[in-house]
Amino acid sequence: MFFKKKTEKETYTPQGKAEILKQLREKYRKAASRYDAKRFDAKKLEERITYQRVTSADFERFILDEMAFFKKMETAAEEEVQKRARQEEAERRMQEIMAANDARIAHYADTFFHPLATLECRRIVGALSGLFPEIENDLRYVFQGTKPWGEMKFHLADLERFVYKPPMRMTAFLAAYIAELQKWGETGRDDADRKFLQTAAMCLTQLAQEIQKGLDGLSQDDATRASRVQARLEAIVADFRLTEWAAHGLSLGKKPE
Image (tube, rainbow, N blue to C red; front, side, top):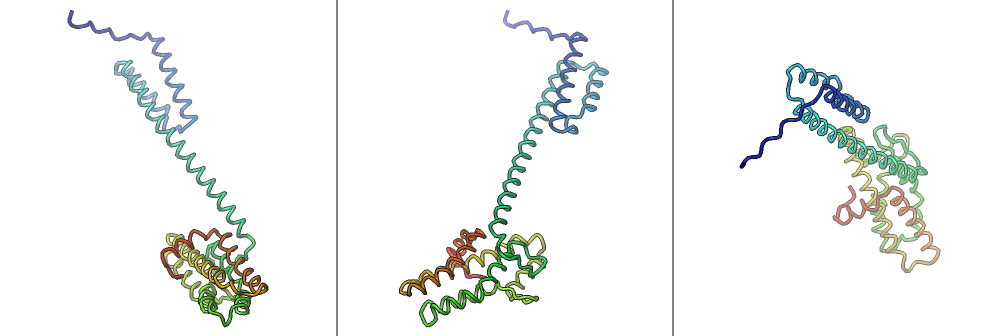
């Protein structure tokens, strides 16, 4: 014979059908418990089972289609669970990083210069406000009359834009930052903070670099005094994790805004 006789379709006894449906229902119950009851809706499953019985549709075809449908939903549900787990892990890690960052800068004063200003920017203002006039006096004492002093005065003036002198005495730079927050609201907050912090990073770094350049030829006492100022500037950069932002801005030849 050239053609093989077709195998007759398997017949299911009522008991066999009942057992298969019991297993299918159990799969739905477990999946609804593990994933989402709305996705694995037992009521809708029962409606499909009833329709199959009423129409006397092919039972094997019905079960195969149901299992394929179940598998598709199970795969989608598992992907959703994994995605949610990744998001939760990312959020947890972000919270840890933020907590660690907050701890690093907690010793700087929270200078509440405006309700819209974010905590990190308020603490930067606190940190930089705490530098003046002490560092300016120290650097003037050590470097005035020398070539490096000209550049240092320029960078000190840039840095002094962050100094807040209450009550309500904001510099033009601080006022511009607040104006940007008021203009763009929450949607512009990240960009405004980035510009604010990057500008602080560049001002701090440039002044620290100028001090380093001017250390040669100083007396031991003057070099120690200047180095202490440099260390304070660099500590703020490190504590606020501004090193990369400073490097990026300076590599592009940007001027502090």
